[in-house]
Length: 474
Ligand code: HEM
Image 1: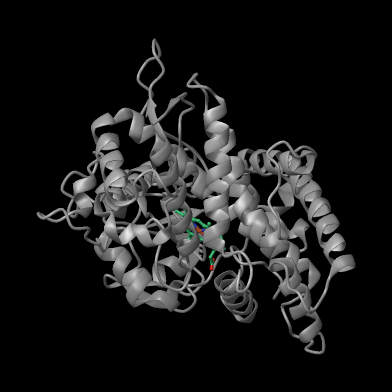
Image 2 (image 1 turned 180 degrees about the vertical axis):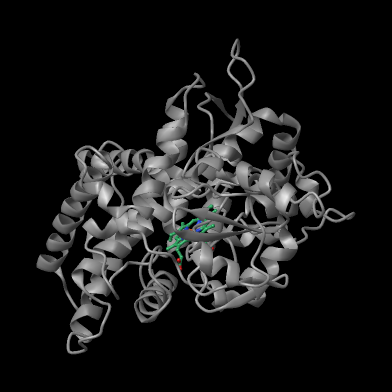
């Protein structure tokens, strides 16, 4: 490797690496975005690292990210291998969505998922209606707390997860349903197990999984999740009615039937499980964590909360529930939601990309097969772009007349070929959940409790530290 690296002219600079481990010990995997931002101060916005024998290039700052993700989107559209997921049944052309290599399998799954999500609800309850309904259930739970202090983590998580359940399984679950609770618990345990150094090592040394105990928790969660999903898919098969497509699973089972004579197809039952797992893992924690940031910022900044209340009262009033169409008449609330996402910065380094072909970024040579890390955090907090990058300042998204303005460096969903597949759904959920909660309640820090922390902790996503709120009916 060192020999090859020497022959590459214009390869990005980087810190000195030690034999075998490379730079693994120079990155704090509990807050990788912080390590990367520090390294970029020394080595520039495009720098290289070595994770054992993997060549890694880290991209930082808005200008670089725009060139890479937007202008050269396909060049870095691949994903590196994730051998720690082989036990899920991942193989060529059957890799779900999130970790799929850039090729036919990924294209088919992405196109199918996007169009199924888009058409979802035609003639039935639309996705928007389902979110409005779920927001209503969430408000009832908050109301049942009777203004006493509580931690909203579990309830927001259940509500957001139920939106995906409704799409994938055709129905929501009661918040105390045993299977639903098990499902949520397994995802949470898996997230904990997957963050940290051990999984990084498993990525580069897959054989470590044969050492008893290594990755045990993660593998156990995977096995049980697959079992639960298989059960639900089998139940669907029994009641499948081609005349009435109920949900994502029905649509997928019908697609499998349609293309079954194509030996190269990526539509198989294993891939249905992988894609469903992806919709849950990518679509639940992300939106739920953003909502927790939203509530936190509202109790930390009561003046901003009051302005959101004012706008809701003016535009929607109290007599009806918020709908998506209200968004364009609510520039302040819209700016607040954008600022929550910018400051929350929940997926600070996105997911790793891989160079699909030899390419150049900012004049640096990046050979095919190099792992490319997009430090989105460095864009959302880019000091050369934002007026107050480290402060909660909704005015970032407002002009002098108070109109909403789009900002190019607002990239929490990444950009380009691998941009978040659920961006549209997530934006819909954030607006409806947030506005409905704010229409119903005033949130505040419980009396005699200290001001909650505004910094984050990293566990695959950047989350707020646990905090309690009081929700007073308006
Ligand atoms: C990928 C952010 C919600 C499904 C991603 C990526 C980011 C992201 C940064 C990585 C993009 C890249 O590799 O460059 C977010 C945020 C969300 C959110 C901030 C909420 C606030 C959702 C939802 C869904 C979803 C609700 C489910 C429908 C996915 C999928 C991918 C993805 C399937 C993989 C796309 C691919 O590799 O082609 N998301 N996401 N996300 N997201 Fe989201």
